[in-house]
Length: 284
Image (cartoon, rainbow, N blue to C red; front, side):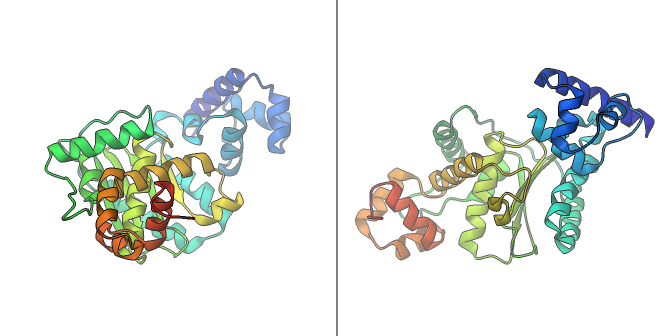
């Protein structure tokens, strides 16, 4: 424990100095005394989960960046997940996610993984669909439903459907052997497909370090990991992948009804409605 505390303290001190923040200022911004920060940095004590998350926000780093490498596996992921779940007060979801992590950790590392650039979202989508086509995964006008699970696996990401509380659409977690997307199997099929694409977007665009929870309550500011800009970017990614503009424009000429198009592309009618409006194919 002392060795871990020393490593955490060193990382905390380095992150604080890089941010140009004094111990006193950091302590004040997280509601603690300067003595507590000093003890953490000198490895005399380990900060609690809530304090770790608060400090990461102040310092502009991910919580995982303050953990030593040995803690950035399942144990570290569980620590950080619990920090978020504790603030949301959802013990049932906590148990469900622990079970999911155990399943995810037992999965083998996927082979034949493709590499996709992550500098710009439109380029990522174009490259992903092109690489998928090379592997025999291509949507057509006759069958425009993109095989999103297979695309995820080509990127080295497992997709697991589990029973979660209704408030959780999905999550992304990165373990030593790769990444895994958890999907709420109780949701409609169209919503599940969008969740997979959304979380895959987070992964390919490198939005999060170790994990991401897709909880709607986060919009109210209850989740310390929520960033609306990243969520919007992941939504755009999902829409671009599941409803490629050229293909949708062709399909729209054949059948302009959003409900019919939603069924053909395997998405919800709401998602299709937004996509048609954004592409100028329908009125708001």
